[in-house]
Image 1 (tube, rainbow, N blue to C red):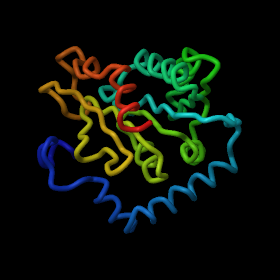
Image 2: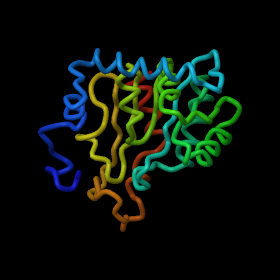
Image 3: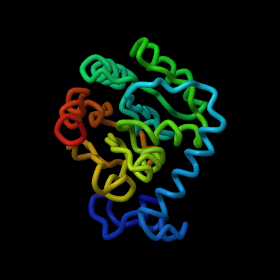
Image 4: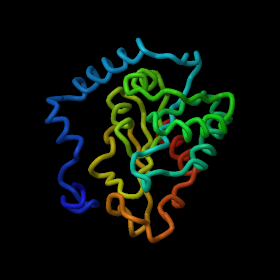
Length: 212
């Protein structure tokens, strides 16, 4: 669908606005009410205890491989945030991502957990988070609707002007490579150069300047 619309770099519309109309969400207040109900439903089914301390959320995986930033980057970022900001870390995602999510939380250490895969439960976790850092996925929009600060790392075919959360409290990081954004599910001929143009320290600096 993306490839048949106007260019990925210049658009007169945002997909978020289109879906908002389709779902009859006429204002941010409507979105927040809908999202908070999802979070309430999630609280009832939670099987994992959330720590009684401030925490942030990582959403490291996308269903599209070329949008992913890499396990090592999220591990480094998580470790630094836990050490420097004294925050707990919760790593969320889909059930099919369990192995990678567990790998990330285990590598970050005792101040991190994973194991939350249900959409409603993720909403409950997000509701009280300090912020979320993740790749270009729908969870970032759920966080934004709940009023949680977001940092979206947009790579590969991510059309940030079309699909990323926008407005106050939402920060988007994207590479400067000329091949970005590429076509959906296309093979990268440039050794995934865009992933190397955003470092964990870049994200930390953005958090310090824009979010924290």
